[in-house]
Length: 595
Image 1 (cartoon, rainbow, N blue to C red):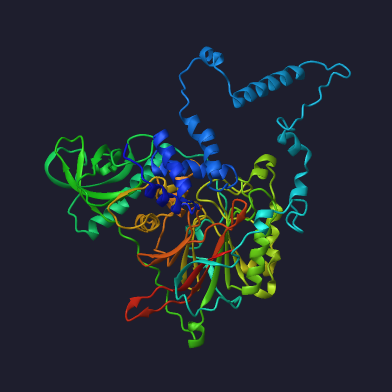
Image 2: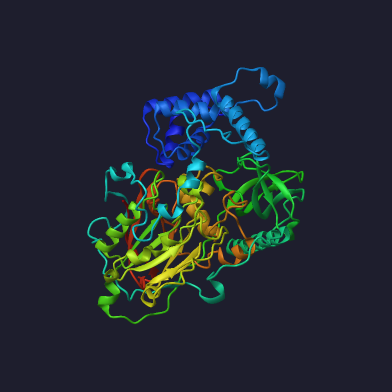
């Protein structure tokens, strides 16, 4: 295993926006050496541990707890017999597990017998063995946890959220930093519509769980053939050869990147799976001759190289993907003052509650900002009722009343609202692509200013295209992508992959938490154009950047554990025009701001 350096760990911690100091980095470096971990692996493990504990900070004490609970468990042998385990000294955790198992067995036996008078046992309650939270959850009325009148009057407000600092601080900027006035007009005349309506847009729920492996294969094969034909015509390639054909000359092959095992992709485990027209076989790929590369599972690529034995393809050249053209709106005749007036778009992504409370204080603070700044359009992405929230996991209650939140916005602001669901929304369909919310009780006035969009989708806001997805594709692809010698940072590479693969979710196989319907994904999950602005909220660090002409925005999440997070805002030029015959980006300025 290659040696891990402190710089490797610092780089990975910066990616996740985790605060650290030299002592904690030295401690993590020591843990890497003791447990034979790489820099990115220990940071992934810490991020999972921290998230499970409510975003605990990176300190020496927490690292000791992390090592005891996470790292030592990974080293525990699995093949020891029950007899040998029984004779070993048990720790407090294993003893508690035995006690818990005995109590469950005893309660099961009691359920089959008729209890005598006075024989009911009193539950043992001590600081070490408190009353079961599951039992408490049964006694708590779910309707008391959340009310449409005040969101959550009976819940305890989050102290850490209330004591947060840096409110309103701009943490990332793009474009014209000086000069723009972040105040909209709340223009009700702003047009918000799906780029392609009718049958080409996902507008209602659909039946799923009827997917066949044959259908998945057909979708993947068609994707390989379509992107391959675009690359062949763009690079003037005569034809593609079979990837497994043994030849002594250099050939050009087409296929999809995959891994030779169920583990994480690395430079030694890359396979190239050809399409049906090229034989459909998988062949290992040697990347040692490539000066630079960036690959991930599911990526459709064209490679040039040799396969002298038919067993391994030695790649010497990798062809870059080609993005789609931008949207060309029809000419719209407008007065000069209308053309020059920018449109303010605000965006925020859930969760909208702190991790230890069901109070919607962050959302109420955001509504206050919206009513003060009066943006023309506000895009709200899920989760609205987060299935990963600790209290919701225990109670498992559907909170439809949350979606009366649109009535809390000041009608005088005239703000156009866009709601996008998330796979983490406990009350909505758990399928990707995800249909829009169904709010049948909207009034006529609210229906005119509320747009219910699916995940993913492409919106048209005054002839400026917005690509939206609430699924954390940055996190999923960041864990799988490998690169060497590219000279670019990870976020830019992932965004470029999305645009050149022409898909809102190009990763295959998808992450475990993404329940993919490939038939609908082929129909509604692909990009038909390159959007002017691509919004991809993520657990990873916020950013705004230009990637091959598309302004990509990660506004972050409105809450990060127990503290406040960030939201984004943009100033866009409606009905963008050509400047000296060239396309000019409609995004005038952008910012990510702390709530």
